[in-house]
Length: 394
Image (tube, rainbow, N blue to C red; front, side, top):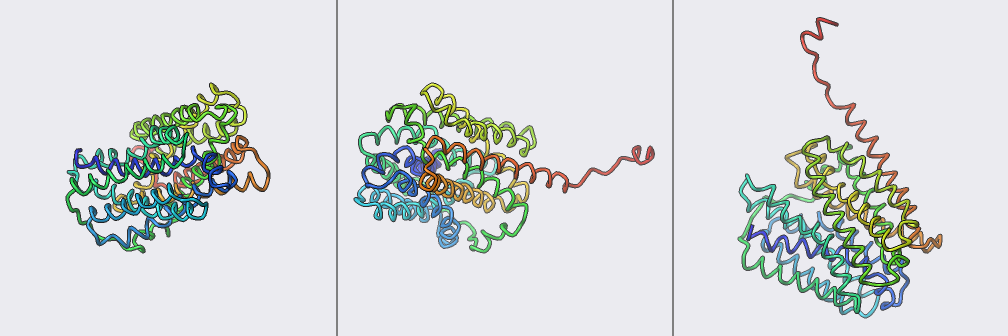
């Protein structure tokens, strides 16, 4: 596992960078002299560019050995965060976030493929879980710590993220061997999108995160009544949410080994929809907000693992491509959610805490689509042939 540490650190950095802007949004809006919804579009654009650029950049760098690809990606990522921290205007910061997103998308795919290649077959699953666990750990620790660090100046958090990315790059350069993998063209990476069942599952993933990020992008303003504007209390609340996500992820891994992944997903989606609908009430006090954040975090944390299992079951040989598309669906949902939350505030003057209502509506739509998809796939599955005794009785 020692050689995998730089890879896990790289994914931890990407996860922190992806989530932390939401916790710093009020300070960013004030510093850049824009509205909070406008600042929220930094999250939207980052997620959208990351989702769209990942398969393209993966195809362009597919011929490079993985160590070189990771070093290029980390260099772009670190430079993008440094320019973000230095940016004096909204336009400069927006462009810098787009550049950072290109590097971030390359890091996730290159890190996972490298981990699978250098680990022995009997430990490949554990290696992938260890490396991609950096993203989950970022949710639990990186986000609240980044918010806490940036309470005096949000730019300090971006410098910290850039510094961790630089350490990860040094670790990759010093400790990772050259790994060459078969290159996949952009057409190969997008070919599964022609399958209706793949699209149906990706739509569930996208809708779930669209609903979640309609509110989460503006979580700082939404929790203002509960935290009284305190960055420390906001960090504690985000920590409760992150620990919930981590716990949900762990529980999901155990449940899908024993039960149908589609059934595992149903309950958490219902819980998430109810939790989001209760946001205006649940965020009225700090104590209730803590409980609400933990419950919502657990429900959301369950989602990814069952979806990954269902996609792999559709085409085990194409698992890396399918998982990459699922990752893109997550970031498309994040981007659309940030946009929807911003438009709801600008066009309909919806208060940040009230964004839980449209978020709950989208999550309910995700639940209904999931149930329809699961029922359709269950009815399409081949039924077991009757036994000789059953035939005789008939």
